[in-house]
Image (tube, rainbow, N blue to C red; front, top):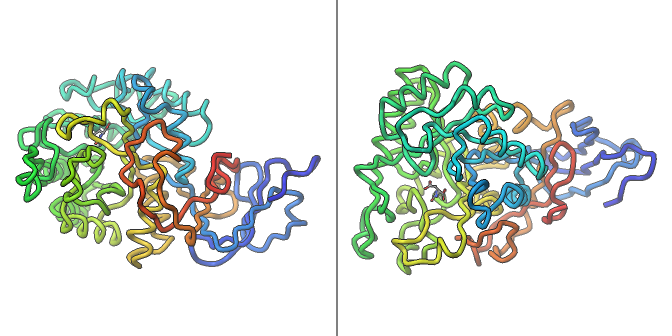
Length: 440
Ligand SMILES: NC(=O)N[C@@H](CC(=O)O)C(=O)O
């Protein structure tokens, strides 16, 4: 890699010989934050640009995470906008949607602008705040949806994530409200009378054996079924956060066949980890919704491959040790995900042959950007497009070390596992945020 020469095109980058979306090999010249040329570009023509030798590397649009918990404000001991942004960049992301369950909750325009500004200051990924659907996530009164949408943060995705918008009337009003400005409600589907706050293990064989309160799949499915009908009724858009069961996939398939405006995401952990991991009562594996049995995992993989599930979203949920290291029932729900998501998807979907790299671009960049209404992410690698890009090394497996993380938290369920591919370089509007796997 050579540095810029004085007096030459500063900030330009020449990516030499990358496999674009895992297909044809091309050189990609980035100038002034945008893709300038794709094809054959000589080093001389690139005029002293920083050169990245991308032989053997796969070039994708920068990843977009629809579901990140950054914990700021309120729990800066677990993560900040800056550390979460760093984890995102290391994971190949150029944009993240920051969930509203902070303290205070992101339920006003001012709160949304504050998170947005913190993201700008960190400057590692574009941080787009998710607005709460209801004030204080209490599920009763709608939050300032319109003001958040019109704010500098331009909020388009609203969610009470961590809590379900259980009241059907409130959900209906929220869907009607956001329709006016093309917003979407991302629902944490958990019918509270079927799975209450203590429910922490998939209801089935293991909840019985381990004596842990069951969280049945039907608690998710009845909300997804209700919400797709509300989306149809209102003509508005609903997004299913962290889909986790085969039954949810069936509902989604039906709803999409009817032309209902529903989209869905699946987490990396629900694509690979299963309920039996709870046998040792290790709270690292406590997550909401819970890890499910193999039948559900298989249905989720098939749904992601065939487009029934639109996107992979991390649900990156950092927790401080003093919240996570408890008896299983008392520990916080959630696991880290930003730094490992691409490696998990490569392992589960690409290495198995279920998907190619162009599909990975679709589910981790293009569809998430479309769902969130982000116009400068998830774009094709083509002249004139913003240079939000990631280079992946498909031949560099990595063994995850939770202590090597740039996140402030250590609740990493992938520790010690070997994942099939790694992130080499991330570019945000042409600026290198990650170089050879490390923050630049
Ligand atoms: N997914 C999780 O297990 N945890 C999330 C919120 C939630 O969805 O419960 C968190 O904020 O920690």
